[in-house]
Image 1 (spheres, rainbow, N blue to C red):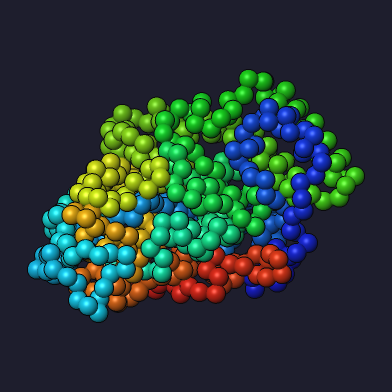
Image 2 (cartoon, rainbow, N blue to C red):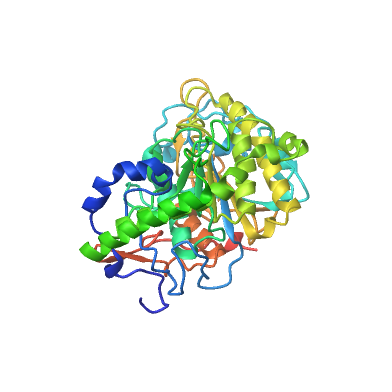
Length: 475
């Protein structure tokens, strides 16, 4: 292990190809079932702790400095919500509605004319921050929210933007944010995965958005299809028909066979990943069934969140956070639902399904004493153009858009940065995706320049060679 100047694993810990035994015993592993859900075919090294302290790969670890928060809930609005219709009002668009944008301010990808928002904005709370009529319930929490109106990056294409916002790279070759966090910090609850993704189906790009890539496989996100929430089926094969002692004997036998295989053929970190996944699967049978059982919530709480895929996901996110899961990411829906090219008024439907659950989540985190230890993030892969596409739609736009953060460590009732008067470019307090990632790591006690992993002869990090902490949003 290297000095504590960087969190990294040396070349000796890198994985090799899968061994013959896994091919021969594939049916046996398949009968256990949950292993394929909890781990990919990539590698892991359960014997190495990223901070050099004893324990398995998911054991809790201290960061580089005192953390402001312990966990993250990322509410990802895949498809790209329009900033000028949600959290960034533009009165100038009212004046110039139907006119061509200034020649020097042409909008990428868009050929239409400037279009005012069809939604009214008004001020909320003591802070007086303006929020669209689309989010009246979230607006009630505006004094606890930090709105970032100056997000930007270089790629207004869904696939590349999704990868950038989730992994810091526009190509599907890097570990996701959640994987980096669990690699660096582990997780408090050893009976549940450290990084859980809730999506009713898959967003564009799919599993690469929560991939571990070259990090050990145990850090891959566990995807839960929350289209229907039944604790017995939401994770396949979680309920076991064998008595616990018999299942334990079965796992011990498999482990012994695997250890004999390793002793004969040398270290195999891919096999280590399978062993770790089997052990986690075994432990999950006792806590996983409980955490996904929403029938245990009082009817008052269920009514507070409302019903539906996103509402259930928000409630599960609170339950997972309460159980000590490090990272929970919720995708609003399958594919790219916020991608309203034809009619921006369709945003009303998406906001209607997400506004109440998000408000309930924020209220619940406070009521249960989780607020100060949790960072909540809202946003998508980009915003949408201030110009029209067709008659009433908006195209993709990445030069300036909005996100918001709330919870421990960030300023309350605060606006950071701005776009220009038309909402085209981020002009003040500009925040790139790399800057956001650096700031998230900072809030969890990690120096983004020191959290590295050596792969193929190079030290990689989430922010690559970029990223500046956005001090303007820190409390």
